[in-house]
Image 1 (cartoon, helix red, strand yellow):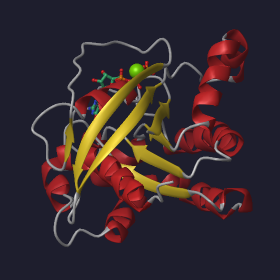
Image 2 (cartoon, protein in one colour):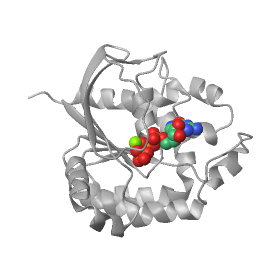
Image 3 (cartoon, protein in one colour):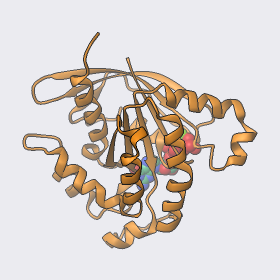
Image 4 (cartoon, helix red, strand yellow):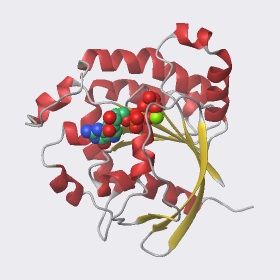
Length: 243
Ligand SMILES: Nc1nc2c(ncn2[C@@H]2O[C@H](COP(=O)(O)OP(=O)(O)OP(=O)(O)O)[C@@H](O)[C@H]2O)c(=O)[nH]1
Ligand SMILES: [Mg+2]
């Protein structure tokens, strides 16, 4: 069983993203069980086993996942001290995961760039704040805790809030004949421009050379985009040697 952990700040959408996977209509990813909400902010580390069938071109892959949903409790050093056992548990869960999925929220610069007319209720941070958060918090966190992790998936979540015409984008990036991961990652890169340098530096660090760091753009409002990280995991699993 491969272990996938979903991390990210409070309210970035971790729990919704995981549950949305179980909502029909499915495209290439079909969960075998479908847990239901409703749910509010996550208070403790929650683990559930999830079996999904991923329909790859040559064969279907059945993924058995231990899916770990985490509370976005930790925004500062202070909170680490306030909840030491929860913090340690979180670090341990990350260290022992096969896949770490880090969700990042949108920032103001993204919606300006795409001129999205969506009425934004969220309090977007500035691009600079987003960059600082990544550099000062997430890079040290990943560097420290992902020494043995082989796959880091960074998702810019809530893409419906900054990409114009999400259905069209989703349709263009649907996994089907002719789909190219290279093209897809080039597209996703555009939504990480404030931290592209930091991500490159992270990847170039020789301590992380065993890792695949991949960028995705996700939203619960478009099935094709929502499924891609899971399809990517299935492609990695399908080439993993079995002992
Ligand atoms: N527009 C939009 N809203 C989303 C999306 N995903 C989640 N949300 C909203 O974001 C809010 C927070 O979602 P959660 O899934 O509870 O976030 P979380 O990261 O699990 O939060 P904690 O458990 O408190 O750390 C909810 O109001 C969701 O409806 C998305 O793709 N698009
Ligand atoms: Mg949650």
